[in-house]
Length: 379
Ligand code: AMP
Image (cartoon, rainbow, N blue to C red; front, side, top):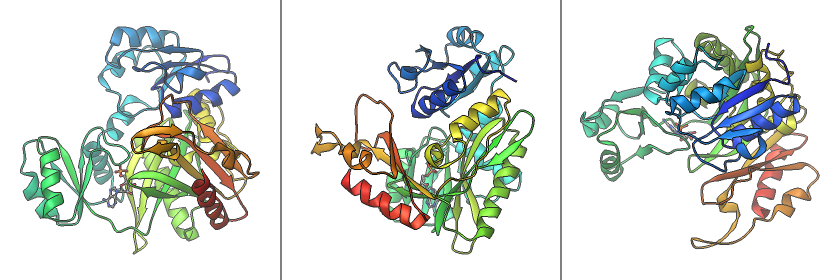
């Protein structure tokens, strides 16, 4: 057990690291952040911040020597430097989990090999005939780069000849996966924590609404039949065991019209679709991640109230064309008794950039969603 008072190192310095640091500091830990870019959201609230490249093994080694355990909040960290620190400090989840989850091709191949339900896909190597591969899969489909994709970046939906040409021009020299376009009923996510002792806890399944590929609303409890919730939880537990995760794993799912649950993506870290847990759950996902990586008993994951989380993008600020002309209407959220505002301290609002979120609670998930939409409109 890594006792409170010890130091947790976090690779990555974004908002997930910031909210992780808040949770860790409340339990008496010191948090050190390793992040290439200065002035990030996490460094600002942590005891120490090192701004060096992830591939600078010397700097990384010096960083971990001051830590008692290390975790990460960002997926696009090269794994080779992590091999070099593995004997110096416990790293949770293990780098092999990161290696599987950070590349769509490896992730999907892993799901297929281990018999987990996933979106059917074809693999395309750099230099292969992408157009021919797209035609073999059939339209509509989604072409995604194998590496470095998130929030819809590195992916193009192909539904006609024009979008096919666009995908070929964008991705012709990259490794890609081509997925069938799934006309899903809804998107769900399940977050599972597993401690170093093997103890596991599953957060209530969330229902997620994306707008332009970016998460817009997360709703708990998900408005799906109990059998779907149970199935999603079982799937989450099985994946976490098979991947041998210590820490949190977020699993994004599609629920199809036929009631099938398909895995879309895995993320071995706290996840945007679990932010509601800060205000509407006995234990937040961030605290649970602290507990899991430090070997503490896991916390209770009961929901205290139906809830909806709304992402706040830079779009919420006042813009005239490309010019920023004013703040968002924070008072609309702050004045409401059932809303909680979280801002990440990012210096520069930009269109499409995640700047914060707010959570509302209500008697039912539907009522919470109505309130969330109303407050978002007033923001
Ligand atoms: P991803 O970055 O793969 O999680 O994709 C971002 C979002 O794009 C997902 O949450 C879905 O809303 C949508 N999306 C991704 N892949 C597919 C697919 N194969 N079929 C339909 N929608 C998709």
